[in-house]
Length: 323
Image (cartoon, rainbow, N blue to C red; front, side, top):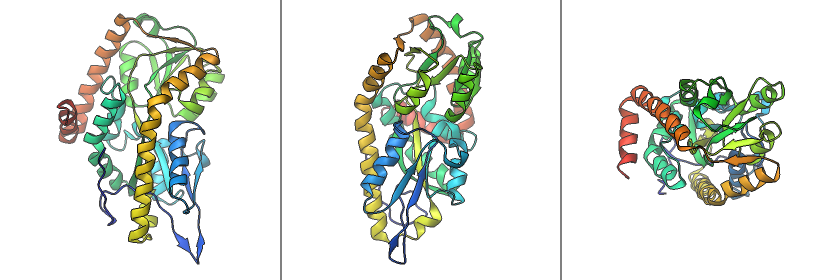
């Protein structure tokens, strides 16, 4: 997808960041709540590699206890130079961040790319209001339901204690009788271990999947969404860069995002192979279950559009027109 090249701070420009002081390179921490091997972690690793000889140090598993919802503030305050956040976890800051995880809106890589093209200006603007600047976007494989027991019908969702990753997912599953609860990924492991969760709405990608299959041996391919994570930089640190550094780092961010979309082409199949090797049963849902989920999800999308106002309506119109 086409990206704009912008070198002046205060404009919508995707780039990574690095500053040299007294002739020595100062490492910049790039933090995410996700474990090594998950797509957002892979994005930070690739960004660090692409930005060489600049020094960016990826940090995983919510360093300092900072999870996605708190990441923009942590980066704006300078706790980290770069942060990654699951977009849906930022929905309380701006409804536009819920867009990519709206149920059954974009369920293929091609659709997810097209939605990102329509939404990128809004992501840029919303992040700038939080005093951070977009670096790159990380796509996730399709979301399904991990569970202790098989989920074959809508009745199997009733009373199910399930973790969701954003408000619309919570509303969708509650509409079908599930006891859905919005939780960060870092909070999931403890709740699975103590038995207070029956299921998790997630792709279970990479390192994240390794934590889920220990407790949840069933995965239902409902094709719920293909959400994104956002990586962004501290604006004050970015201001210290020269124009040449900004151009170089924008190229690194562009290479990173392009590479992540290429990786996505084979990632889901690789994930599922590892899941099966670790005893996970992967099932496709019956059409009746999908119909019930889509109906509940449609109500959540309409509610989101009302909250997002003109910006949300414009994005959806552009996306649905194929533009």
